[in-house]
Length: 222
Image (cartoon, rainbow, N blue to C red):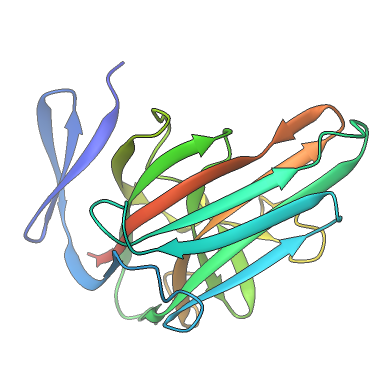
């Protein structure tokens, strides 16, 4: 089956199935956030939080002014020690944009999020994904990308994203709660961002070093 993707044109969302465009419903864009510059992430609107459950996990988050798609980009390196193999550990990089805030209006009907960013795989399978904060809770969401070519910038965009795609993560244990989701219909203000999450559980390791650029999220109602 060919992958599904979304095309936005004005207020209309169109679902693309292969080469066939199927009109869905008329949506209204009420908030749009994007950023392709991450060098000032520690002093500007982007705020980075690094959490690890053991010293066996190290995370380095850095910004660079050249080499991105096309210029500034962010590099996140999440690494687990390979010895001993039996330990369990988790690591999380949370990057929130203090300018990317949205307050749901109960008078409107939330429709969807359209998420996007460019990513370059350096090593490992643990890439970036979208995240958001609401009421002091962090919710880890999906990624617009599912496959990479090492060393190559890949652009991804996914529409139709619902609140149920974001799962709360305990910021102490770094365990996801798949039954807890944000309220994008009538809840309090949310702050959007992205994250990188990895797990070492016995001999199984999910780590990675990935670059990110041209992050964006659009909020639609109908």
